Length: 295
Image 1 (tube, rainbow, N blue to C red):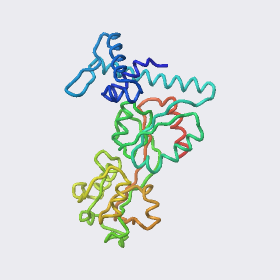
Image 2: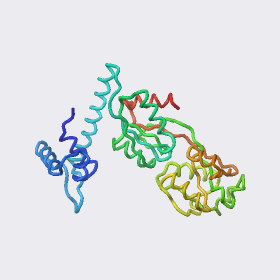
Image 3: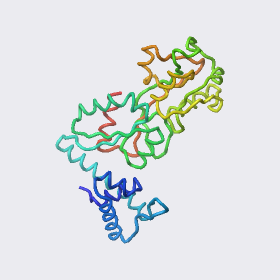
Image 4: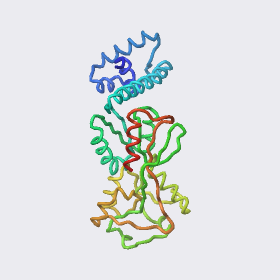
């Protein structure tokens, strides 16, 4: 339905690469160049300019990208509304999920959604909370599910599911026989932590401050980008980590990992569904109402 030249421009603008756009659209790079030149002739303005080995959007390109995003959003909503008239739910829904949710929670949710709406195509991207929020703001996804709650004024946050973060170590750790630690003892423990931008890390920092401990006081042995890496590291290291209970159920049942309570430290949080401010429309609205029932 859309002008393919506009789709080519949009892909180049998001990737800032003619080569990547060509590969993604399954066309040749000269074809990409041709479509961009035709648009530039149509609008009598340069859309990209080269700076060294990279390309950047011109002011005209930024303006066209802004309107292209609105055009594609309108196309998606039109397709949904027309399908709804005949009680069909079809189309592509792009979802983003932060790492812990994608690994341990979202798969059964998506499977149940697909069972109920088999004609809806789903696309899932993963990353930390910051990356998922950016994808939403860049309109690369319609809806996201995140671990943190950073209160970006352009984003609407809806509570989805409760979670608890607990202190975990290998069952072979020297302190594994302890059931309770005092907060000050945390300062002498080597920790595996998530990377900056992680929603989990944000929640942990806040809880530790309430317990009188600054993040900077912890001994950080290593930072890893996902929960599976952290669990594997713990099984081979005398270190500890704060992890979601959803992520460690199997390892605790098998006796590989041990949960240790910390006196006066409770780390509870919610997972959030996020969308851009304003009314949720189309398939995103369908998914939103489904998850409210699911949770």
